[in-house]
Image (cartoon, rainbow, N blue to C red; front, side, top):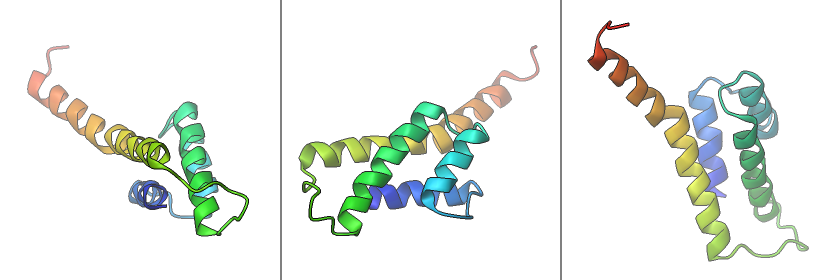
Length: 99
């Protein structure tokens, strides 16, 4: 559930604050903030968290593998949204205007 909350917080930090997490993931993909594949993965994490948040009796309890997958996505999402753009900006600044 915390990984889904982290995805939610990161999207809000990027200005996607309106509507449900489902809608915000869709808008982020539509606006090319994230790729379609990342949106698909984000929806999987969101749905897994929903099972736990809503105490779905039919859903299996998450195990260590599930936790590792959710955590891996949250890290990848953060790197894509925040770390990589910062590295690119620094790289452009460090290389000067050689183009």
